[in-house]
Image (cartoon, rainbow, N blue to C red; front, side, top):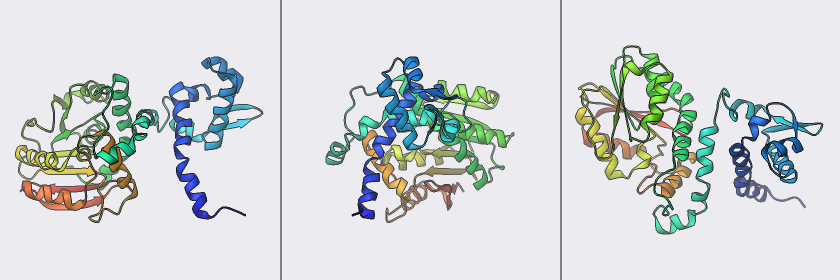
Amino acid sequence: MQPSEHVTYLDGLTSGYQRAQVVFTALRAGVFEHLKHPIPAEALAHALGWSPRGTRMLLDALLAVGVVSKHNGQYRNGPVAEQCLIAGAPEDQRHILLHKANGYERWARLEEAVRTGTAPPRAQPQRSPEELRAFICGMADIARISAQQLLAAVDLSGHRFLLDLGTGPGTYAVTLLQRYPRMRALLFDLPEVLPITREQVHKADLAPRVEFVAGDMTRDEFPPGYDLVLLSNIIHSFGPVVNRDLVRRCFTGMASGGRLIIKDFLVDPQRSGPPFSLMFALQMLLNTDGGDVYSTADVEAWTNAAGFVEGEFRDLTEQTRLWIVRKP
């Protein structure tokens, strides 16, 4: 007797954490760097100082999940690992995966968070420097593609001064400045984040056109005069009251005719999709004081209250949408 499709589906659904841990363990140990060329399990175990038995089992699990290949008892990176899991790879995803790995223990406390409605307390309130770098550089890993999609979705050639709030690695600002040579930018983020931002801006050779401002966007005012504001994946970190005030302050300092672009995991008004966004809300429950995913109706209400006009939604990816408004 074969299991029903429902049983098969549930088995795959509930074993996902096992496959994730296989990849996380290998990534943290630098396994994929050793698999650029064929290597037997025993040799890898010796190089890492691991047990041959455990190493062989991990490599076979990596084979099972499809990220390495095996031939004549030797293992090497498959196409996914070559493309995404080694330093200098064309679509390097190491930092964002390490960020996800760092959140594994938080997700183990999901029942506590759901029961209390608040994020479980942390042993250390602040991320370690390593965790912060993984998070910020991970944002760059996933922003490289979506920044290009933003360029394709919206013509911003008429704007000259970008305010990028919560800029993180500055990927969107860098991409916009590269496309629009007459544009300059003010990159705003927390003091501990901006050193990483500076690295990325200097690497792109754009420092003369960029100003860095350290602050807390939930309460600090922004230098005025900008005609374009980008809030990319920011509002989900905060509660509705904070977001409403943030949008208001964006309006206050903006030049007439300027535009605000909110990019986020916006759900439909009935909160029935997209699936990624519905799942992401739990990430905010586990890790923020008041964060959530918001509906298109929510962001429209905030911008209307601030005085913005001519609102327009655009789908950017399967997970993200844009809300674009103008200051009269």
